Length: 96
Image 1: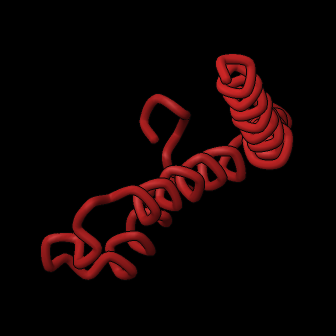
Image 2 (image 1 turned 180 degrees about the horizontal axis):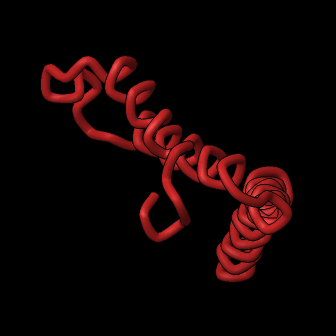
């Protein structure tokens, strides 16, 4: 009886461990690889192209993560497009 219980616990542990490892290789690793590729892209960009790429990445994060999808009543597309022009005109990354 006790052997069955221990065997079932061991089997459950192996199944859960397999799920965690599978999740890492299917979900986490590709996300990390994509983030590393994007970071490497930022290093190759210079001037206005770099600042616009940084701005676009930041606005994508805001759109995906901001808790209020109505953006507190702001016209987010208009605000984003106006700010993108200012980002392109910034003299350096600090002023971005």
